[in-house]
Image 1 (tube, protein in one colour):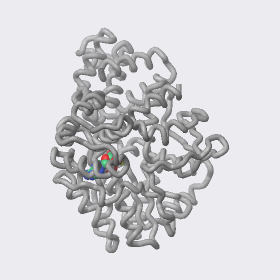
Image 2 (image 1 turned 90 degrees about the horizontal axis):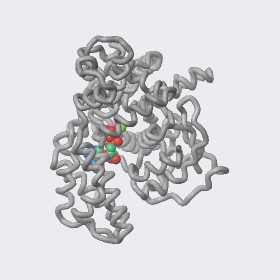
Image 3 (image 1 turned 180 degrees about the vertical axis):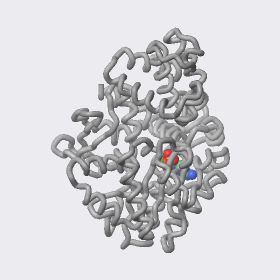
Length: 446
Ligand code: ADP
Ligand code: MG
């Protein structure tokens, strides 16, 4: 199963990344939703975790591995070290790592220099720069929100770089909300809560990425709240990101929601055409350094900026693939070549699955009426398809829980959350459901 998942990742990460990072991964085991991989060094573990976690999880799930979390263990005995590829230039040793042993290294590609500024992100950029200067804390927290792939993580890493450069004696800790939760759970289990509290409370700047993940995680929220308050009261800077505004994060305690809003809340809007052209141009410069032999014909940039509107990550992925292809076959990158080798990206970018479509397909599949799907009947023959449809809506659209609930006859967001959890769980225990979901997903994505 892992070999299939791994194969599937080739497309997702591009050939170069695949060879350097994915191919050498050895799956050790999957236990309680945690997949453990052996890798050659701690550096590789870090790099893969920071860069490919989402894709790997996705590929695993698609290939029947029930995985919620990934672990990468440095096991030089199992996986021999390989020469490190150019894509990850070694960072100069930092005088002091964030929070001592924590070992967070900002991604060296994510700097302010490399962030292209346009109308949609100029305020977020300016706020991030201001916070990175340090000095007196004015916005606390700085709350960055915006859709996936619009540069939230990039800006947070950029703040870390800049802040560390200006204040080498201070500590900066960046952590995703998901890691925060796992650290917390592990500390509880291993009775190391005091150490963990000390760790978080000893930093000068704390960044928590993707806090929407804390929705519904009550005790983690509680811990987060105390950490947050402690740091704010002690004049430490906090930076938070989420995929939506604090008001729209369902299942977040009110006191946390209001805390999150009391600093500066700025959003990153979807990119416009000019910004996409700018981003492509700056990335092309970078790729020319890696693939000096490959040239790109005029018009390709404009073509890509028109055709790929989803997010910057996809835009970058497209370029990576084109340059890799160009490098392999030693030719110019032309519009024809782009059409050919990016067909799947264009398809995905053209087609946004709608809630209507999902409801229709699911009704068809289970042979029930649309009114039964959105109605109040509680019989399993209606309830199950309804839950499957809600799950697919969450998975395939970027609608929020409350929005989805509304479209299912005005149900509460907690009902949708429950349905999503339920279906996830069923997919691991009931192969018929797992199959239904996969069939439907394929039909909807086709
Ligand atoms: P998010 O955290 O909002 O989902 P990321 O920060 O991970 O998004 O950005 C996705 C990718 O797009 C990263 O490789 C990042 O460097 C790139 N990116 C996003 N916005 C910009 C920008 N304005 N200029 C340059 N690169 C960008
Ligand atoms: Mg991010």
